[in-house]
Structure formats: structure tokens, C-alpha cells
Amino acid sequence: LAILFKLPHLIEEPPQAIQANKMVQRERCRELLRLGELNEAELILRNDTLSKTMAREFAAKQRVTLDRSIRPVTNFVFFRSGALVAVLPFIVALALTVAFRFAGRPSPAWLPSEADWVFVLLPAIYGSLGTTWAATTLFHFWLRERQFSTCMIISGHWYTACHSAFSFATTLAFIRLECHIPKRMRLPGLRSWTAQGSSLFWYYLAWCVLYLALVFGALRSSQRFYHDSEEANEGIACMLRVVGLSAVAAFIGISIGVDNAVIEVSQDYQGELDADALKVVDNMIAEGVSAFSSAIKRGQVCQVLQDFEAESDAELAVKEGAVVHVLAEVVSGWVQVQNVMSQIGYVPASFLQPTAKEFKLDLAHREAEARDAAGLSKEEVDGQDNGYAKPEPRGSLPETEQAGSAGA
Image 1: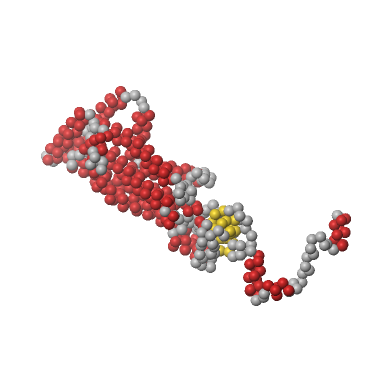
Image 2: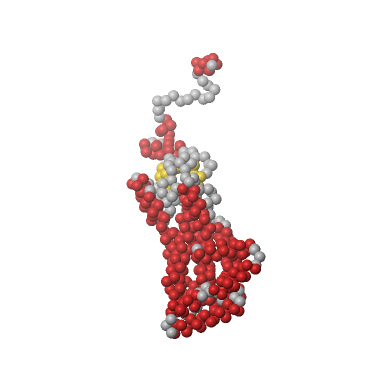
């Protein structure tokens, strides 16, 4: 669409002197190629002395503005980093998280949780990394030489900007998919940035708009002196030639990011678990549940968020809304709990949420189980003489104890 509607031409065109010089360079390059003078053809095509001279003269006469002041930074960050600029906010958050861990301090609540990293943010970074790898590799090993054989310089700014736009679109779709489709969400109770209904999608969309606003000025600056519309169109066309491989690389990166942490982190804990708990971990790996410590702590009272069906003797079936008591710290995403009927087993930590509700054992249920085990009825148990004297009602203490109490 950019080529069809002549977007580069509408944004900016270089002065007539530069356009005429570029046309002469292309014609001279083709003549030298026909004569077999490959080195001379490359030198002619690369000669941008006139463009640099006019750019310096223009900059010296212009007053300093905020846009011109930050443009060198914009050029360096947005075009040197390639498609990784699409996940730049996530990379900054990752750097802060690593810094807190090296300092031995817990990550603040305003940083992403580990569930955010494992299932959304790291896969997004891997996807953009795959796109950047494909774009950079193909440019340096194929397109760079192609521009001399065709006597047409490729606008690196447009080539990179289009790949970045592709990476933005891919990341935006992935975030939308992971944060707004409940069936795809794993460990929803442990997410913060990527929880269902979170504003991450809109914040990221705002970052996309900011990128487009800043990169627009950089593209204008590039076309004002260094590239005409033909070279800009060639940069866009070259991006379209390699976008298929870029898409495959992005898909592989996202897939690796989604699946990689599950098995690796789970296996880190296997040496610490007993045989029954290992079955839980194996089930966890098969189901693709992430393995990491959660906010659930030993001694807490938690409410069950959704039904969980036990699949082994080590697990405990729980119903939504039930209250359980946490008996041990979280290991590999699973936690040992006790329900009100004194049953003990493992449940996924992601199914639990700390609550202020009171935890009380169902003593009547325990007595009923004991009677059933002994083969007795409630009446038989009540009529038995267990050898203990029944307590007197309050206010009817024996005379000796009453006297003693009065003396005290």
C-alpha cells in the first residue's frame, strides 16, 4: 500500500540537485557493470558526498528544536535495534527485574510477575528477536549485494521501519490473544501485567503510536537528503521479499518462548521432591503448567478459584469456593494443603487465592468417619462409658471448688 499510494513521495523528496545526481549515478553504474568494472560501479553508487554536504549546510542554518535534538537518539535506537524496538518497554522491564534479583531484593509489585514473563512477555521478546535476526541476516547476506547488481540503493530506514511495523503487529496480536481469551490463559491468578482484562494491550498500542510519530520524522530526515522515493520504494519492496521468512522466525521465537520455561524450571525442582510429588510434577509438565513459586505461603488460608479433580493419590480434589489451609511452601507450582475434612494433598497454586476467611476443621465429619471405621452408630457412641466424668455445667461447681474460688 505504501508503494501503491506513493507514501515515500508524499512524505518528502530530496532537492532537485540530489535527485539528478542519483539518476546520473545509476546510469553510470549500469554502464560500468556492462564493462565489467564491478568495483568502480559500487564506488559510484555509494558516493553520497553531495548528500552529506547539503545535510550539514541545512542543519547549520536551522534553529534547535526538540524534534531535531532527539532525532540522533531516535535514529540510533529505532533503526540500530531493528525490530526489537517493538518490545523495547519489555526489555527495559526485564533489565529492572534482573537488577533487583542481582541486588537480592524482591521485584516490586509494579514489575511483571513471573507468570507474565513466562507466558507472554518473554515469548514476545523472542518473536521480535527472530524477526530482527531474519531481517538483518537477509539484508547483509543477500540484499546488500543485490543493490549493486541492480544499481539501486536500498533505503535501510524504510526496510527497518517496515520490519519493525511487522513486529509491532505480531506482538500486538499475540498480547491480544494471550490477555483477552480466557481459554488460552494459563495461571491467571498469578498474572499482573497480562491478567485478563488488563490494560497492557492499550498501553502497548500507545507505544505503537508513539513509535510511528517519532519514526515519521526520521524517515523525512532520511529522504530529505539521502534517499529519493525510488530508493524508499526499493526498501519497502525488499522487506516484502523477505517477510515470509521473518514471519516464520517470529513464530518459532514465540513458540520457543511459550514452551521453553515449563520443562526446564520443572526439572530444577525434581531432585527435591518425593515419589508422590514427582507424579504431580510429571502431570504438571504434561499439562503445560508453569513451575515457579507463587505468592501462596505456608500457614495461609486460601480460597479455591476453580474446581480441581485429583488424578493421583498425591493430589487433592477441591471445589470452587472451598477454603483450605496451606501446609507447606509452593514447590514447582504445586502446594500441599488441608481441607476442612482433614484431607491432605497437592493442588496447583494457581487455583488458590489468599483469603481472610476463617479455616475450621469439620469435627462432626471426622467423628462420623471414625464411627464408620469402627462400625458403630452415633447412639452407640453417645451411650458408651469412655471412663471420663462428664463436665458439670457452668455455675454448678462442687462445694470444695466454690470455697477455693472464694478464697482466691
